Amino acid sequence: MKDRLITPGYCFILAANFLLYFGFWLLIPVLPFYLSEIFRAGNSTIGIILSCYTIAALCIRPFSGYFLDTFARKPLYLLAYFIFTSMFGGYIIAGSLTLLIISRIIHGLSFGMVTVSGNTVVIDIMPSSRRGEGLGYYGLSNNIAMALGPMSGLFLHDAGVTYPIIFCTSLASCFVGLLCASLVKTPYKPPIKREPISMDRFILLKGIPAGVSLLLLSIPYGMTTNYVAMYAKQIGVNATTGFFFTFMAVGMAISRIFSGKIVDRGKATQVISAGLYLVILSFFLLSACVYIIHWNSTVCTVIFFTIALLLGVGFGVMFPAYNTIFVDLAPNSQRGTATSTYLTSWDIGIGIGMLSGGYIAEISTFDKAYLLGACLTIISAVYFNKKVAPHYEKYKLR
Image (cartoon, rainbow, N blue to C red; front, side, top):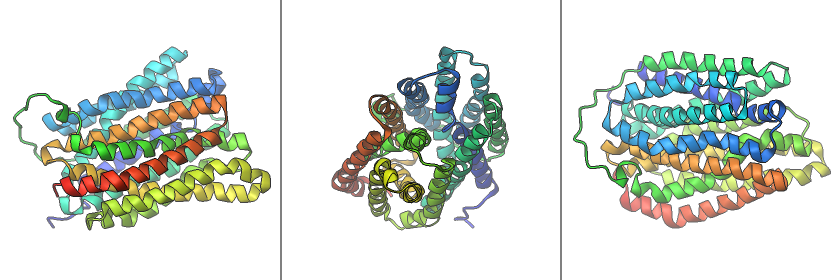
């Protein structure tokens, strides 16, 4: 029973994580349309406004890891969750781009804190022998939210539902998630001696090589999650683009079922390498859709959703493996720092992807953005195999 994974606390935090990400993903494909239709913003402006969220999350990540390693984790988790939930109301009352940007910044700060704390709390309440599997299922709750959230958001938008109602839907989802989070019981964390503040209290220095690889990988991911619906509309894909996220989430769900167990058998680097090859292929195909649709629109639609499935499988196997690498490189007293470094690397890339994707689309087209993303994944793969994998094998603690 010591290695039991499925406990009431674990189930509650899975539910809390799902509902938080459902509210988050519900707005991801809708916000570009909101900014374009209500505020008449151009693609570059949309990219800047969307990236404010990620930049804010990035700014708080290193500090949140330090706070979580120093103070009680559950109260910080609940506080961040509450602020994140309440900020959906900011979108409803924002009557100008300035107020919307302020809301996005506060929302991003709370998101940065709640995701690091949630990820750290779930590591605390699961047995270490099943960490890869447990993180896989935890990530699966994100994927299910990713399957339902964007599809629901685009469905509501296409059905003519007003934006305030869409924002209220996200607010309600996260409020229920906050109630679930409050029911999670965490183990007692004894007071620790506070060490002098230094760089390694905010960033896991041994995790920097893995962070660079992850950052390069997350740039095209940020371009995809934020602009793929607009890209499909631009090239003329006549299908419900919300299903792109559904297929992507199905791929992630399938891969999560087995990838975590493989990671627990000590094959984290091999899992990441396999995922990288799938993602490289997927982004090259995505950039080629602009040409394929002129040849055969039906074939292009099939390829478009197949890409989503392949991206889901590729990223799905890599997420728990990357997370495990960061945790394995850190002592137990720096779990929060390891998690924040992992998510900080991801956020930097997402932010760059949002900014560069909008900018490239403004001066050219989205397919050029995805072609650049494909090239970045190749660089990430080479760097991972040459530098990150040997570094991990040399310095891992468990």
